[in-house]
Length: 245
Image (cartoon, rainbow, N blue to C red; front, side, top):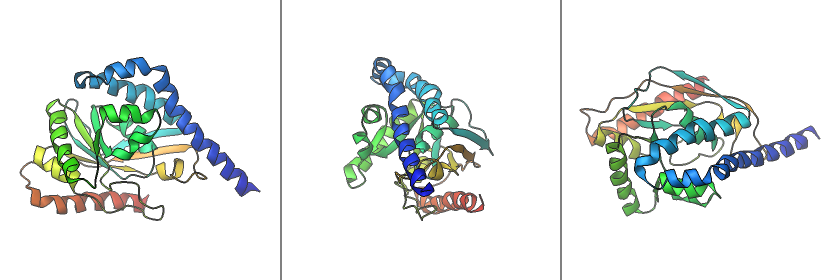
C-alpha cells in the first residue's frame, strides 16, 4: 500500500514539474517571444530563464540548488559547459550554475515538448544526430554564438542513459568544438537529479540538487586529435565524483 501511494505521489510530482515549466512561460509569453526574436536580445532572455524560470521550477519542486566550485567562471568569458545528463532538471540546474549567458546544443526531439518546445527551437542549437549536414551546421551556429560572446552547453552523453548506467560514453562533439574555438571546458557533476526527477513516471522526490563545478580543462594549443583523450579525461573525472558521492 505504501509503495502504491509513493508511486501515485511521484506521478503527481512529475505532473507538477510540467505545470511549473509552463506557468512562467505563459505569464511572460509576449516578453519571451520578443526577446527570442533576435540574437542580440538573447542575454536578456537568458537572464529571465536563469533568474525567474529556473528558480520557479527548482524551488517549486523542492529541489534546492547546492553549488560548489573548484574554479570560478569569469564574467564575460566563453566556455564549453559539460555535465552528466539524467533529468529534465539538468537544464534548470545548468542555468543556475553559469552566470554567463550560454546556448544549449541539444537534440531536435525536444521541440515536441508543449510550450517549452516553442522557445527551445528559437534560442537553442538543435542537432539531428542521424544527419551529417545537421551536425556540420551546429559548428557554424556555435561559432556565431561564440563570436557574440556566449558560451555553449552540451551534455556529451548525447542523451539520458538507461537507469542502471551511472555515466554513458561521451560523444566527441563538445571537445572537438572546444578545441576548434580554444575555449575552456567546464566539467560539472549533477549528483541528485536522477533521484529528484528521473524519466520514470513513478519515481521522483524533492531534496537538495547538488552540483560541483570541477577544475577547467584548457584547450589552447591542443589539436583535434586530442579530442578523444580529452573526452576520456573529462568523463573519468566526472565518473569518479559520481562513484564517490
